[in-house]
Each structure stands twice: as C-alpha cells, then as structure tokens.
Image (cartoon, rainbow, N blue to C red):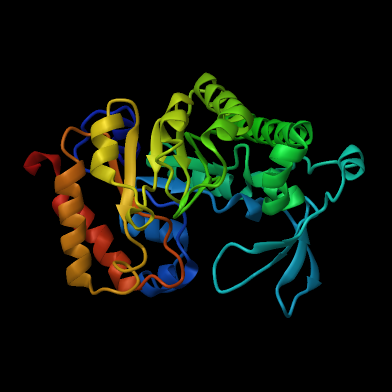
Length: 345
C-alpha cells in the first residue's frame, strides 16, 4: 500500500497492511535531533509517516511584531501572542472586549494565499503518495482567541447570543478555508480545538451540545461533501463529551491521552466501529522521560492492544513537543513499523 492508501484504509475502519503513523505537530528541535539539517517533510519521508499535515493554524496568519526580542507580536486576528520554548505561541491579549467591538470587527480574509503556502508545499511533494492534511479550527479556538477563554466560558451563561456570534465567525472562516484547501488538493482536515483538561471537559456536555457541536458537525458535513477525510484532535479527558463528538461524523479521534484518563482500549471497544482510534503514546513519562527500550515496549504493547481489527493509527498522546527526547521519538517511529505489520497481528 502507499502511505495514502494505508491512512485511508484505517480511517475507513478497515485493515491496512501496516498500522499507519500520524502526528499532529513535531517540534523542530526533535526534527533536528533525528534528521539533522532536515525539514518536517524530510523527516516524514525518511521515517515513513503516512500523513503529512500543515502546522498549527495560528501559523497561517501574518505577524506584526510588538517586541521581537521578547517574541511578542499581534496576528491578523488582532490577538497579541508570545513565543515560548514551545512551538505554538500563547495568546496574551484579545481584540474583542465588548459587544461594540464585535460589531466593528472584521476577521482576516480566509482566502489570502498566505494561508495555503505550507499546504501547497506539502501537496507538491506528497500528493498521491501520502495523505496531505490541513490543520484547522472548528468552533472553540477562534472564539477563545477573540475574547479569551475565561470570558468566553463565562459568556456562555451571561451572553449566549454573543458567544454564538463568535462561533459563527469561526465556522464561516474555517468553511471558506476548507473549500479553498480542498480545491488545491487537500485530502484531510484535522480540527485542532481542545475541549478538555485532565479534569474533564472545559464546559458542561449540555453547553457543548448547544454551542459548539452544531458548527463542528456542519464543518464535518462540509468535508464529506468535498470528498475529504476528517480527524478530531482534542486534549484532555473528554469521556463526557466523546459520544457527542462522534455524532459529528469524524473519521478519526485523537489523541486519547492516558495521562488525562483516556483508556484507548475502552474507547476502541465502545466506538471502534464508528471512528478510527488515533494515539496514545504518552509524551510525558514515556517520550520525554524514559529510555528507548521502554518506548519500544510501550509501542509494541499499544499496537497489540488496539490495532487488531483495523481502524487504528499510532501517534503520540498530544504532539511531539520540545521536551520529547529525539531518540525516543525515533524509536517510536521505528517500533511502529517493526510491530505494526498486520500479517503478524
């Protein structure tokens, strides 16, 4: 099978020749550690990743530097962000402070060619070989960037109509991004909004269903109409809202973090006939703190536990951040091929 065929087979809940390899993001420090002088694309080719994906959605918007030395900038949404030792800059200040601000607010142009530079580069190198995906947002992240997460969650109670207007902006922006990306040749959309912490969902299941699920489902329906696959990424313990997420119709769910209380075998047993299970190699104790021998054993045990019957992709339980040991990630990738051959599962 080609990498594309292997990924598509798993997302269609069938059995490929080998367990596909997926990763949401890989920090450049790790890339350089196992592929010196190389790029993300070079690593994907050398270590046989089945899916390649554009970087965090925030990277698709231009920066206006406020303090370059401190890594502080304003993006095209009007969000003030700051870089840290991690790859994704964190929001510091938000453009919408009142309902009047929203009335006068204009979001960035979703069709600006700048948004698609990375996608076009990946398509040029990997189209029809690997599955090429675009990392996008669904209904939660953009609203949190516009007003701040704490205020957004309070506004669910205090200003529900205001929250729905923010969500409409998000859904419309992502819809138009997706239409253009599919026109360019994207095979997959990965929706990267996080709805949970280790303690549970960030909002009640009822509020999730009322505010965030309808737009999420509309975007999944759009992806289907465009002939593309979908994966839902969300960190945290999402057990309480997982049944609702599955009703949206995603092809895959990621990353099912064991440190957040997600039991990947239980999820596979309960939902494996509806959605492809993707994850859940721990990025903390296993990939950041242990040794290669331990990593190989965990990969072997995870594949033996979850891969039988198909509908599974191996991936980290979050993303490959800067604290992951390069030698451990390399071991994970090699072990996935060593133990992921379905002839022996």
